Length: 191
Image 1 (cartoon, helix red, strand yellow):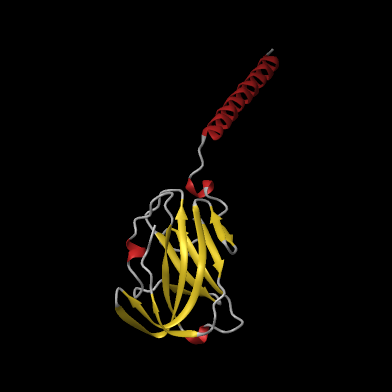
Image 2 (image 1 turned 45 degrees about the vertical axis):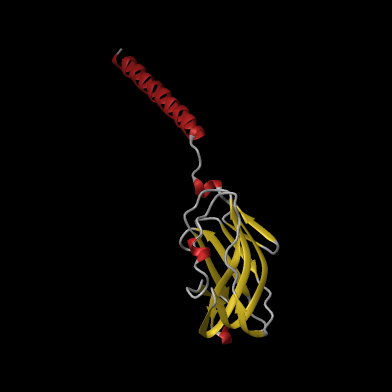
């Protein structure tokens, strides 16, 4: 009888363990079903590339023109550089909330941050959901880096680091006339 009693206890223990595992799996399935994805998952795909109006999640970018200049004029002040200015006229829009829009110029894999010599109105513009901002982005680039067969891309993302891969990001290839104009007047931001 003791053998029979121990067999019953083992079957009962296995049955209780199976029921507990089934209940735990059911609770886990209900919990996973109720999880809401965070911004990173909602804004996927993270990177979009192309010409015209390019969109990635809540971020959209349209490049209207790109030029090279030896000097720029911002608010009637002439500004110079040791390299060459790359001036990109673009419209940037977003449908979600953001505190900062990062802008970089990628020249054959080398990153150039937006120049502080450009208009500050683009930087100071408070990003407002649904209100695109149009203006000139200014970058200072080594003229030797702008080879005739090289690639130049504008990289825009929502966040501090435009090269980061955990946020929506738009990459727009640029076609730039190699002619460097002597002086270019920079437009301030408009909505």
